[in-house]
Length: 361
Image 1 (cartoon, rainbow, N blue to C red):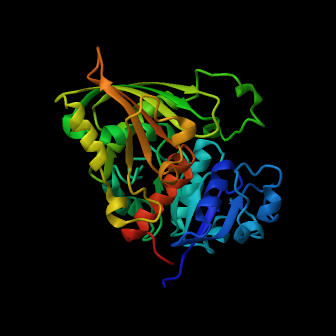
Image 2 (cartoon, rainbow, N blue to C red):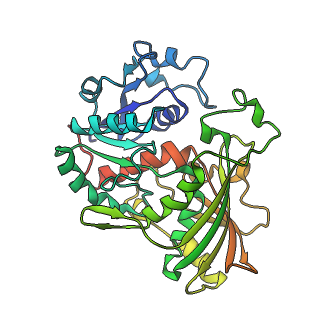
């Protein structure tokens, strides 16, 4: 059996960092050997550093409890202990960009959960089933950074996972206009009901910066590599509203779409049922067997019932029907901290390992 790759989690004490710890417990390919966070957490064991603020229902994995948390700013020190890192830090954009580049320049691959580098032209932003080919731009990025092994790859915004896969399966029909309203869980803000009581019995119709991300990031994912840069697609035209709702996990979207070549309902359902991507072809450990699951019931998908489908890595769709203004409308659902955050990043790392971009140092 091949030895597992050694993983560091930079930003390991926050909610997404905790998800990484949970998901990597007993992972067949990866093992957490280093955890880094702010200077305030450094020097404590992981168990001590998250005491009173462990946000997940499952307990802290035994294997990481006694790992001593390191200072994330001591890049060389952390990088020397790992083959690659996941990064999920709460810092200013320019600080995140500098930190991730510093790790990459040590020859360490960085799989980022942060938004800071999503628009850097030679950094791939990947949904593994949708645009795995974008990882080819890593070769050019490595030249810019002056490293033969280090690089940065990023995961897109959690909100778009609930509707981009469903639309991607229909790209042959050339969608022209999309309206999407997302109803987003509080864990997307790194919170639960204990530390955000204002969300109980409440809806907040604004999430800072979310609508721009939800409208523009799909176009980058559907873009193409030109002269060693990812150039975003020009269609479809997307408009969104993003709303915070009182649920723990799961982002739900209501979607309206028009197409240049209008498909039939039967054609859409067949595309969703048959869709497979590179992770399914490769049989990656975190890949859902069925990426898109359609529910025939009028009242599905429901956030509470369906967010955990395929271990939280699948996408659920329902209520497909013709519309009086647009061609079709439907509802999509994805788990925001699994498919949309840590789980999506783990799947990216698995893809990069399988394709030879991440190797033991």
